[in-house]
Length: 107
Length: 115
Image 1 (tube, rainbow over the protein chains, first blue to last red):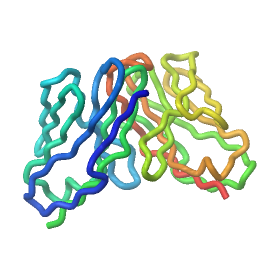
Image 2: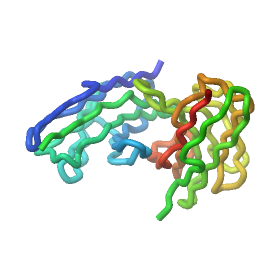
Image 3: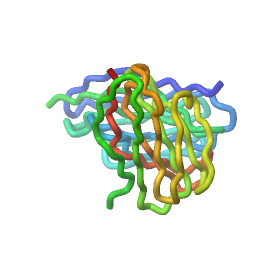
């Protein structure tokens, strides 16, 4: 059965304190891995797609990487506006979402 | 750029009432999806439509029906609402077929409470 596990469930950072979010997965036939950002009261907003191990994507302070078993979302020098829930989803026969990591960045 | 639009944004129902959630996309996408999101759980697929005229069950279809009205619109109906259906419902669309590797784009959800 396809499974996606995100850790930690919640993360509190000081502004400027870099860290990483983890998404580990077990799927049969990975077609793609997606990262989304979700703000309170809003729908998930697409950030990145990764298709194969070794691939990396960057956008502002965010960098996503992929191995055969997991993906990391690295946040460099975060700002309070980076506070959100970050969702990982894996596409095989269907799209399977993790439960998300709630990130709070304090100034 | 509207993207995916869902109506209503909020709704309160009594047990046994029926309701239709509406979704429309303006990105000319082939595939559309309905998810529910509950605290501590990932988004779970209710139904999807890989193309106009087709619909398929997802992970949690019981108690729901869908209609793909045309390429733009995909509605979700609760025939007899139950408290277990209290949730936030999201509609999404993507450019590829139902199991493609194209990203899905989401609306802002309908918050549904069933008393």
